[in-house]
Length: 194
Image (cartoon, rainbow, N blue to C red; front, side, top):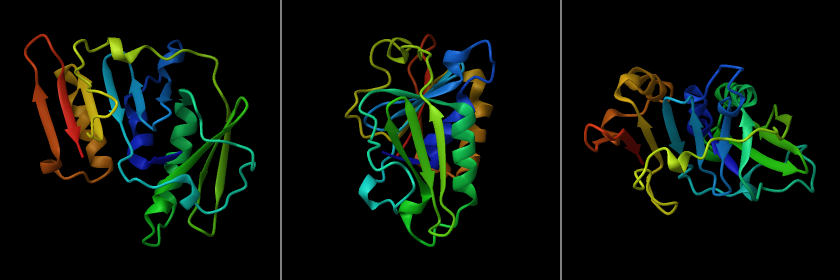
């Protein structure tokens, strides 16, 4: 599975409170959808690039490691380190180099980044915590179906708009690419981009 900077950047919405361990992780679904929440804001980010694992340059990840087949949790600290590694890599015009490769072997997750000269592999044990059932947070399917082509969507209390602006500033996302939807005073404001 390949993860983009935007997917890993969802960590800005995860909790940093050690007493809320289940919120200090990114949830990564088998289709590559990344979820993060701090209890007040919820974000879903997808990889729309359409690249496959076999396009990623060879790494020192164990050969028998596989793409996760079930939902996994990635600690925010590891996601931060991988994101920092991606920011420091030169992509040489190759889109694949702006991604991290995620594999799993047993109870160990492996994430790799490279610029073809300085590969890095991060290892972390699969955490023994449970992520909140985010599908229940926004009733009525406000986050759309799993086949929804929207690359990213936020469901938040409007007081957190500053955090969303900070997220988009990280990636130079053009303002015209973001769609904001309000679904009434009792519902969340949604931010979508493709």
